[in-house]
Picture 1: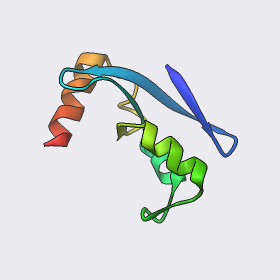
Picture 2 (picture 1 turned 90 degrees about the vertical axis):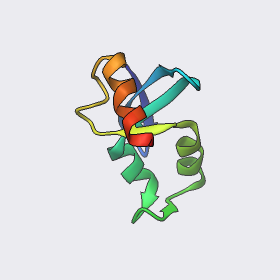
Picture 3 (picture 1 turned 60 degrees about the vertical axis):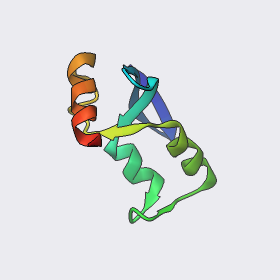
Picture 4 (picture 1 turned 45 degrees about the horizontal axis):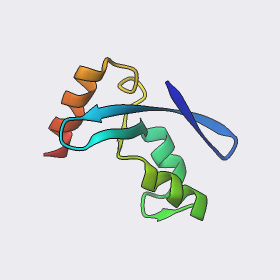
Length: 79
């Protein structure tokens, strides 16, 4: 499990392999919330840069599930 540090707080992140895209970085919705002002604008240029590195955000409880189930979860939500 990796972490992404933003505004002196660490957020869980991990790299997973998606069949059609290869390796992608995912993190938690709490990080996504920290990056955005009311869900519409980035709080800073650093926030925008971090967001552009992350393919998908999942709930805190989902970020640590096994990779097979996590890939299924993301695939279902992308449709």
